[in-house]
Amino acid sequence: MLKDEDYLSAENIKLPLKDIRRALLEADVSLPVVRRFIANVETKAIGINVTKGVSARQQLTKVVADELCELMGGFGGDGLAFREPSEGPTVILMTGLQGVGKTTACGKLALYLQKQGKQSSMIATDVYRPAAIDQLKSLGQQIGVPVFDMGCDVDPTEVATRGLQKAKMEGVDVVIVDTAGRLQIDEQLMAELRATKELTIADETLLVVDAMTGQEAAALTAAFDDAVGITGAILTKLDGDTRGGAALSVREVSGKPIKFIGNGEKMDSLEAFYPERMTSRILGMGDIVTLVERAQETVKEEQAAQIREKIISATFDFNDFIAQMEMMSQMGGMGGLMKMLPGMNGMNDREVQEAENSLKVARSLIMSMTTKERQFPDILVAGATAESRRQRIVKGAGRSDRDLAQLIVMFGNMRVKMQKLSAKMTGESLEVGLTPQLSEVDLNKLALEGVRKNISPGMVRRPKSMKKVRPSQS
Image (tube, rainbow, N blue to C red; front, side, top):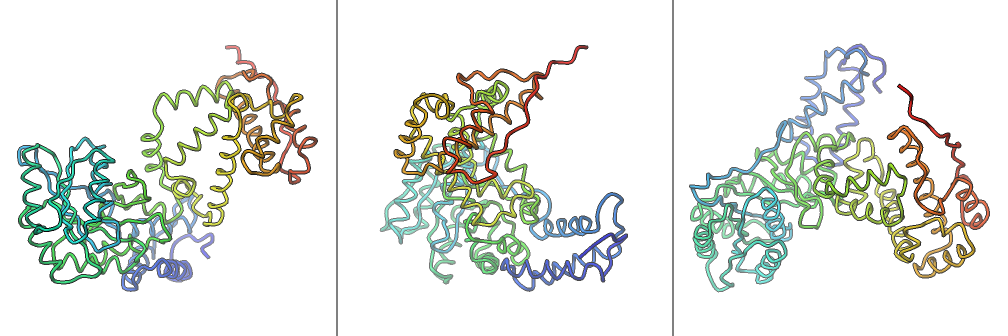
C-alpha cells in the first residue's frame, strides 16, 4: 500500500502494480498486453516526485490513467472519415462474425448518423440469411432509414453495387452496407468482403465485435485487418457481463481504433468511443461528460424548467416521480447511470439489481393510485380515507403494506429535503402548494402509528425543524 511517500519508487509501487496486473488479467486482457502495460507504467512512474497536496496513491493513479488512455488510442475519439458532398455518399462496410449484433449495429449507426444530421441508407447483402434481410428492413422502418435489397438469389457484390447506385441518385450522405457473417473466419467470406470493398470503394470498413469475447476480440480484429483491411471496430454488448478486456486489447493487438461502443439493446444505445472516458469508468472516476450528453438528449429544456420550478415550490408529486424514473430508464437505467457517476461503479451487480427492483415496486404502487392520490400524496397519510386508500393501492399493485410504507416515507423525506433546497435557492423557505401538506408530524405519524409494524427501526428520522429564512436586507 502506498502511504505518505515523497516519490514513487520501484519498491513502493511493487504491490499496487501487482494488484493492477491481477485485475487486468481477470478482466480478460491478453497477457502480452498486460506485460507491456505494467512495464510502461513502471518506467513512467519510478522517480516521479509526489505533488504537494496529492497522495502517492493519487499520483500513481494518474500515471495508470494516462497509460490506460494511451493503450486504447490516446486522448480523443477516432471519428468516421466522411467524403465531401460533391464526391458522393460515404460508404461504410459493416463486417463481423454471426451473432455479434452486426445487423443491429447497422441500424444503430444509421440512427446515430441521423442525429448528426446525416441522411443514410442501408444495403442488405447477407443473401445467405433471409432473416438478416428482414431484420435490417424492420430496423430501417423503425428508424425511418431506407433499406435496399434484392432478395436471396443474387450475388452479394451485385446487391452492393446496385444499392450504391440507387443511393447516389437519391443523394444520401452515407451508405451502410450490412455484409454476410460466418460462424468462423473462412477464405470465402474474406474474398467476398474484399470484392464488396473494392466495388463500393468503401471509405470505412468497420468490424463489429462482441465485447464479451474478451481478448479473443483483439485477435479477431487483427485477423480481419490482415485479410480485408479494416479501419476500426465497434464493440457491442459492453453493458453485459464484461469487464473491459476487449476495449483494452483491441487497439494494442490489432493497431486499429475502437470507433463506437454499444451499451444496450435500444437503437439509441450506440455512442462514439473516447479512450479517456472509458479510462475514467474503468478507474471508478465515472464519465460525467457522457452522462451530461445523455441527459441533454433525454431531458428537454422545458422539462428541466418544470423540474426546477417543482423543486423551488416543493410541489414535487408522484407524477413527477414517475417521470423521473422514465427519464432515468431512457438514459440507461440504474446500472448504466451508476457506471458513469464518480465513485459509484463500486456497486456490485446485486446492489444495482436491488435498486432496480425497488424502482419497479415503486412504479407498480404509483400506477395503482388514482390521479388525485398521485397529485396529492398527503391523502394517503391524513384523513379518514387514508387507511382504505392504502389497502386498495397495495391490493391493486400486488405488493405488501411494507412496500407502500417504504415508498411514502422515502417520498416524504425527499420532499422535506426539497423544501430545504428551495430555501437555499430562493433565500426563503416557501410554503408548499399541496393541500394538505405532508408535514414532518404527519410523516412521523405514518411511521410510528399507521404502518409502524411494516417499517424497520431507523428507517424514518425526524428532520430538524425548519426555521423560516428571510432574505438578508442589503
